[in-house]
Length: 192
Image (cartoon, rainbow, N blue to C red):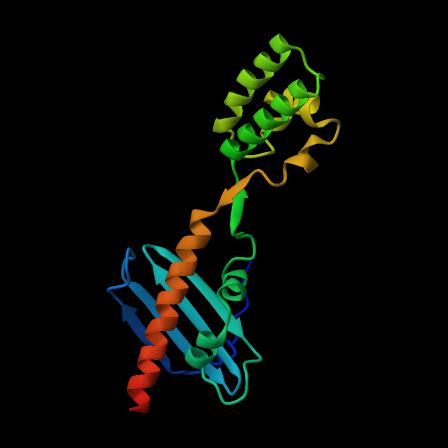
């Protein structure tokens, strides 16, 4: 089928100024690259990269009179992380914490006389296998009988607190703190 020769509409091209910072010397962090772009009054974008990972955020309603670097320094770390990665949480599932919780529940049930010595020992030992569980979802098959026996029909609701600090969240927090420190340092040098 023949194609029509259409004259292409000219593309709109806008030019903006981007500031690039490379931050080194932050404790236990690789070099951090930061791209700051002030797009218009009260509108800005930041991209932060460290060790092959990048996070980007755009704000279309920054506080009046602040550029993107100043605005970024005023924000709370957890707010920034939620902009960078909405799925990231400060805590994550822990098979270790779940195994401990199950074992404590078994011991309490044994003390109350709800479990015999042999059954309690068996359940306590079976709970050790939970330590290697990577997620609560995978427990529905392999260990659902144990979980049902300890916590009841809707056991997954009673295990929400089987968590540990999320190292990825803590890592991103350290990066954001280093970026904010570097931006404040830059602002002080410009003001001097």
